[in-house]
Image (tube, rainbow, N blue to C red; front, side):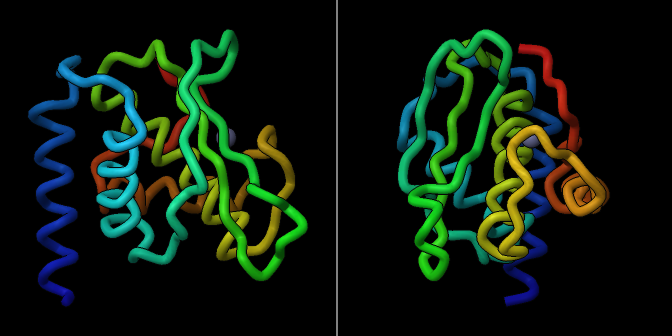
Length: 144
Ligand SMILES: [Zn+2]
């Protein structure tokens, strides 16, 4: 099991390094879910719950967002994740997805939600882990 996790992380980092600039993808629900599963295993030890859905749109000011799904259901926490459809590089896509998944972790695991505009200590505590586990930066602005 430990070995498997190390392999997932290694393959992910190689992918980010060698294919990060590729623009050969289309943002679809299945594409997002495929990468969400990889990041969940590599970064969050598989602890997150599959999002209720993904949404894609050309948002004017946001690269992505994450919000609780049915926020009153505190025993079955889940989220909806939005990704800006203008994102065209793999690394930018994975960076945005990982960022939103840290918010997902805050909602589901930490059971704490200060709103999407809040990027505090508990958020940036993931910075080193994202880099080490997935080769991804934790940033609040992504060029798309
Ligand atoms: Zn954020």
